[in-house]
Image 1 (cartoon, rainbow, N blue to C red):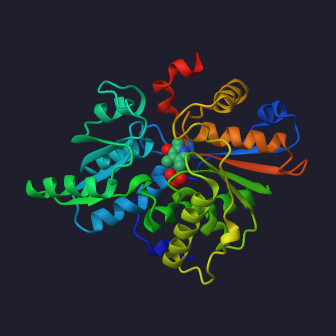
Image 2: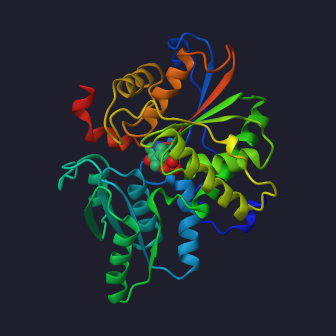
Image 3: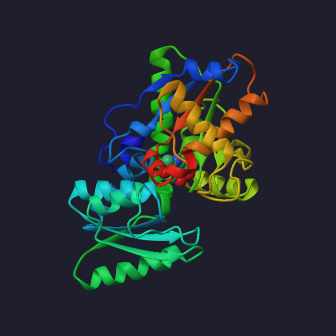
Length: 332
Ligand SMILES: *Cc1c(COP(=O)(O)O)cnc(C)c1O
C-alpha cells in the first residue's frame, strides 16, 4: 500500500497517543493489559474517528470543485458534527440530513452534537423519519443547493465508502509504526463497528501489511451476519482501491452483536457501567452510542476469557463524548 498517492487534506498531522490504562485493566481483574488508541483526541471540533475519513473525502470534494458538503446521520451524529467542522475550516457550506431513528428523538433545541451543529453555523438541517432513503434525501438537498448556483458534494453516512475507509487503513499503519518505535506488541484489537468504514479500513490496513493482529468489531446496531457482510464488502472495495493484491478473506471480519441492547443509540446497563468505569479509573470519556457499547463488549469479552491471560489488547477509542451531554439522565 502506498497511501501517498491518494489526495488528502492532512487533518491528521501527528499520531494519536496509545495510552496504557493499568488502573482500568486492574478493575477488570488484571487478566489482560489494555491499551487505548486515543482517536477521540483527533483534531476537528471535539475529535473522533470521522476526521481520518473526512481527510480523504473532503480532499476528493475539493478536487471535484465542490464548495458545499451534504451529509447525513442520526440526530446526535458525531459524523455530522465533524463533517460540519471540517467544512467550516475549509470555508465550505454544509447541509445535514438527520434520520430520526428513534421516533421523537429529534429536539429542536437539543444538546450535545445537535447544539454544536447550530453553534458551528450549519446551513440547513432536514429531519427525516427512520428508515428513509438517505441518499435520495441528500440528492434532493443537492438539487436545491445546485439551483442556488452552488457546487454540492455528497458524503455518505459515516463517510464509510472506500475513500473514507482509506483513513483507517492509514491508521492501521500508524499503529504499527507506533508499536514498533515503542517496542510494544499487541495481540488483539477491538473496534466499534457502525457504518463500517473504521472496521473495514482497519482490516485492510492490517491484512494488507501482514500484521497478523486479529480485530474484533463490536456492533452498535446490526445483527452479526449482516454487519460482517457489510464490513467485508467495504473492505474488499477499499483493498482494491489501495492496491492490496490479495482479496480480503471473509474470515478476517469478526463482529459481536450482543451488546446492542434494544437498538441503535438506546442505552444499556453494560454501556452505563463501561462509561462510568473508564471515567472513574482513567478519566477518559466514552460515549453512549458507540464507544460506550463497544467498551461494554470488550469488558464482557475480558470477563469471559475471550483473550488469553496476559495478552496485550488495544481498544480503539473513536470519540463521541459530546453525545454524553444529551444523555445526562441516563447517567444520573
Ligand atoms: C461513527 C462512529 C463510530 C463507528 O464508526 P464507523 O466507521 O461508522 O463504523 C464509532 N464511534 C463513534 C464515536 C462514532 O462517531
